[in-house]
Every structure is written in structure tokens, then in C-alpha cells.
Image 1 (cartoon, chains in turn blue, purple):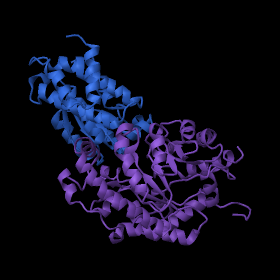
Image 2 (tube, helix red, strand yellow; image 1 turned 135 degrees about the horizontal axis):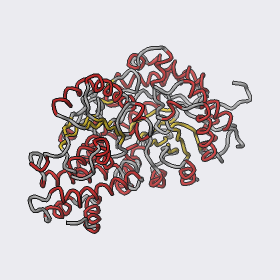
Image 3 (tube, chains in turn red, brown; image 1 turned 90 degrees about the vertical axis):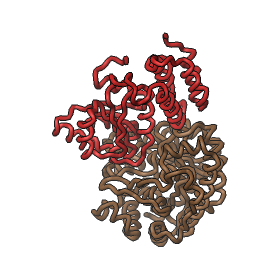
Image 4 (tube, rainbow over the protein chains, first blue to last red; image 1 turned 45 degrees about the vertical axis):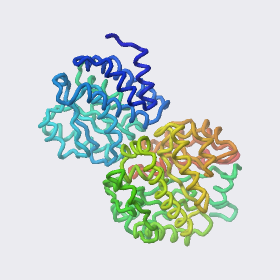
Length: 215
Length: 345
């Protein structure tokens, strides 16, 4: 199946109009049992990427990005359940707010990554001290840190120190408001990369792991 | 102040009537910075209303800005609802665990009595102490979280989006309870001496929800609430965009819109012409490491874009200057304002 721009556009429109039922039907009508990644790569991910671009340009609001990611997460859970053997080759991704009770950014990124077939370990608001052990135990290749508060963005510095001290090779990608309002902050705190939104996070994961962006 | 100088109150009122006073008014919205005045922790600082009042007075004397800002921190309101705040050594407190765990909880939710809350009484005490000191010379800016914004702390942003989109009846129920609280809280601050109320409404921003959803939700809530607040209001988007909904914001009855660094100040000023005054939009996050030159450039640029004809107050774009912004930067803002902000420009 090649990428069908019309279908991507149709799916995107259904997501933005919150037509959950029609969006699900569009994907499940094409699902044959073993083509989940094909559907993700050809329809779901491009639609979400386009929605991400619209968010970056200020053309849509955060709530629309959130709802689109959430609907896609539900659809992908149907065609690619967590226990599916097709997920086994995907890198393990961890995610935390590093102590921030504001969970929205984390929730959007989690939904988006799951909608792209990743295995996501949600560490809630776990702080730097505990997370070193968790990423080791879970074999996390990339840790996403999503913060809203400026002071908690600086928790990434502590995380980097712990990773360096313990010889943990897990890459750190940061995101959230402080990083958007200061585009050099991710370097200041010692992250490996910064994603401006959930949609960019997939490319950044492949960048830091030096994988080609293909499943 | 020499006798021929106008007071900050006169300066601000002139600007808000879309005329040019002696210079551009500016608001440094300082909260946690006050703890540095006494070299104590932020938590200890906000436990003492007299100290907060003294710090506001000292900071105004040092930087010469045109307001007092007795606002403590956003989650103070949540404390009145039975929630808690998490304190940090170098930042504003954050709201703790949400108090609404399930939308079903909304049915039994009751608006707390402002006068029965020791937390809110502290802030009212600070406001009245500042009022006692300043009289009518310098505006005192009170703050409320809008009923439409409070649920981000009451239940968490993601669950709140789910509520708005998927449970409209429960959403309306929550708004009614929150509106009652917001009106009482705003009016209590006005009675204690606040000159105006800053209505923090970031969820209404076009960064957060689309304009068509705003018109069905946050707009109606703002219109109902602002009409019951017995004083002037400024609507703050806390770094979010407002341009697509300027006309609607003007219809809510507010007098000022505080915009984001994400928007062009000249465009916002133009869109507000004859309807609203504009406040903003220095980047508080970047401000942490501004050089004197950068500070001057940013202040000059903002003034050039928005100050002509009055109707403009220079401030940061978030409604709160971060704790980590150095005092030197604030002094540089003040100096630059005096250099570039003289009328006629």
C-alpha cells in the first residue's frame, strides 16, 4: 500500500473534527491482521505529523493536537495491542515529567508515540533520583522529559549527572513550554535533543538513536 | 517623587484611556522575587503577609515600576479548595495532586468561602497593608484564576480537556461552582484595596483551544464572571495567543489584554484599537540571561511597536517574572523604559 495523500487528508480531517467513529472505521476497514505498521506509516503517522505542523505554525490549538493523538492511540491499541509481537523491534521509550504535576504534554507525547507503535514506559512524575534505576531495569533507550515549569526543566541537569555517573547510555529528549520559550535551554540542561512538539519527538528519537526513520 | 511628576496611578489611567502620559507605564509582575528581599525561602516568605507587603513596596521603590502585585501563586486558590502546593527553592509553587479525581466528584463540589480560608486571608491582608501605605498613588493589581482555567489545577489539564469535549453537562456544572468562587475572590481583593483584577484565562487562549470552542465555553464564562466583578479587569493569557479572539475578548467587558511573545505586539495593538488596551510581551524565560544591550533592544522594540497613542503597558508575557531573573536585568528594564519610553516618542 503506498501513501495515499487523499486518505491521509481525510483521516486528518476526521481527527480534527473529533469524528472518532469514522476515524476508527477508516483504519479498521483497511486492517488485514498483519499490516498495522503499514497503516501507521502510511496513514496515521503522516496525518499526525501534518497536525503537528499545524500546531507548530499556530494554526490549531493544543486541545486539538491532544484529542487527535488520543484518538490515534485508541486506534493503534486496537490494531497493535501492547502485547503484539510486531512491537518487539521498536525501541523502548520512557517518559516522565520529572516532578511536574502538569501531565498534559506527557500525555500527548505518550499517545503519539503509542500511535506510532512504540513501547512506552510511563514513569508519571518520577524525579531524577529514581529514574536511573528504572531506565536500567526496563532497558530504556530514550527517556522523554516533558516539563511545564522552568525550575523542573533544570531537573534534566541532575538527570544527566546521574546518567553520566552511573554509565547509563539512555538518551534524553526534552520538551515543554520552557524549552519552547528558550530554544537553547535543552543544551544548557545537557539533553541530547529537544522536540518542539509530540510530532517531532519521533524524528528526534530516530535521530538520537541514529536509526533510519523506518519501522 | 517631585511634585511635578504624575503618580503611577495617573500615568496608568491616562494610558488606559488611550492617551499618552509622561512616559510608557510598566508593570514588573514580581512574586517569588520578594523572598530575596529577606533572604528566606519562598515557602516561608508566602507564610507572612506583612513580609510580602514590605517586599512589594521595596521592589517598587527599587525598580520604579507602576504597580504593586500582591499575587502569591496560582495554586493558593487550589489550597482554598482543599488542594495543596508544592514548594521549590527557586520557582513559584506548583499545584499538587488534583482534587477532582473523577468527573463524578463535580456533583458534590462546593465553592469554598473566601473569608473562611486562612490561605486567601493572607493575601487579602497583604493587599490591605499595601493599600494603607500607597493610598491612591500606585495601582494594586489583584489576581484571580478564571473559572475556566482553575480546572487545570483542580483536575489536571488532560482530564479537563476530556471533560470539555466529552462531558459538557459536567463541564457546565463545574463552571457554575467555579464562577461563584471567582467572583467572591475577585471582589474580596477589590474590597481589600486592589485597584483592578487580572483575570488569568490561559485556557481560553488560541494556543490552547480553538476559537470556535472558546466562543462556546471560556467566552461565555468570562462574560458572566467579569460582569459580576466590581472593578476593572485585565485578561491575561499567560504566554498564550489572543489575536484570533480579540473581538470576543473585548466583548467580555475586560479593559486590557495581556498578550504573548508568540504574537506581534504591533498586530495585537492594531487589532485592539478602540476596544482594549494592551499589556506585554517581554519573554520572561529568556530574560534570565539578557545582557544590558539585549534588554534595551527588547524594551525599545516593544515600545516602538505598541506605545504610540497610549493604550499600552510594558510587562512580561506570562504574568509572573521567574525567580531566576537577576535583579540587574530588572534594573536594566527599568532604565531602558525610562530611556526609550518618554512621550511624545
